[in-house]
Length: 172
Ligand code: GUN
Image (tube, rainbow, N blue to C red; front, side, top):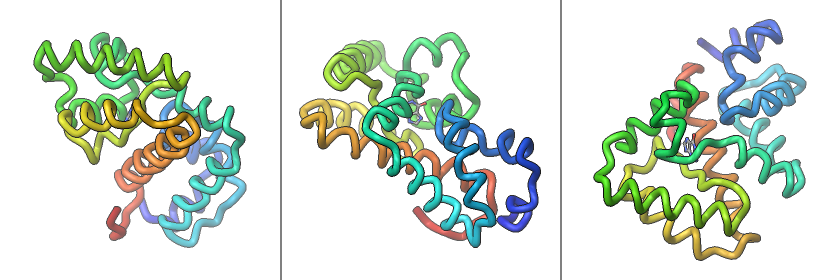
């Protein structure tokens, strides 16, 4: 749909269409409803980013905690959101070698123990090798540095999801 149509949606339709642009966080979508009308898709993205940035650290960590593990239980059991499943399958996470699957599971667990939220990376922009490499690298970060990095990934995931819904010629 075009941005003009987005601006004329009812709140219910807006929430239904955009409710999962930030994984399992319809609150973000509900919050940016107040920022309409959006001039462009880039404007809508900026309003979402602004809202996320305005949250205290606990709110940002809460957003990260709404994300499922990459190649985790939900991928196996088919209980991911449609968006997350599509992204994880495209990144090759359903067809991991057993050794990589074990390694990812172990690193995910260690990451969660260290930071208190799951490892989030834009799967649409990273294949499985890049995901494993980034996970090992980011695990070494100080928590103060890791939180904003993880939140930037949430914004990238959001932008890709938005671009699948709203017609645009912007490049990421
Ligand atoms: N990157 C893109 N989608 C997801 C997701 O659903 N979970 C995590 N952890 N990272 C992601």
